[in-house]
Length: 132
Image (cartoon, rainbow, N blue to C red; front, side, top):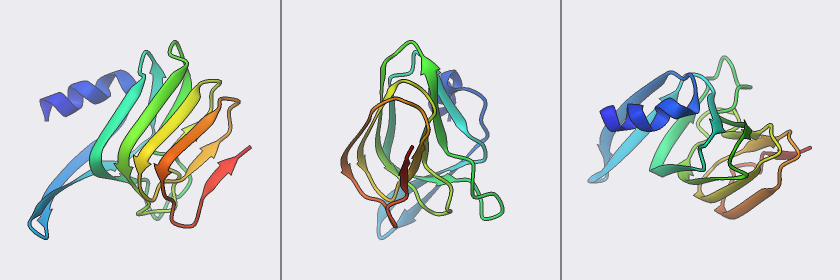
């Protein structure tokens, strides 16, 4: 847990619950984000290590899991995440920075900023990717 806490600390204020279990003989890890993780400053990559990220709740389906805001790094990469348990968007790019989403399942997003968006090997249940 100390490595996970250290890795998430530069991203901003958050509440995080970690659940691990076993499904079909393999290990599964769930990260339950209780608030929005602000990705800012010098963060350039968030690696989900093929984890399931539970974003938001049924009672509050609007807050994004990860919100990209202005920072010193021009391109931020998110990779190997799975989401979609609730209707909350997985990502929001509210900045001028470029967001790259790689190798991720059942993710969605609101791209409200002016930064470019690149997707590679990404699926979305219902294609909830809003480009404004």
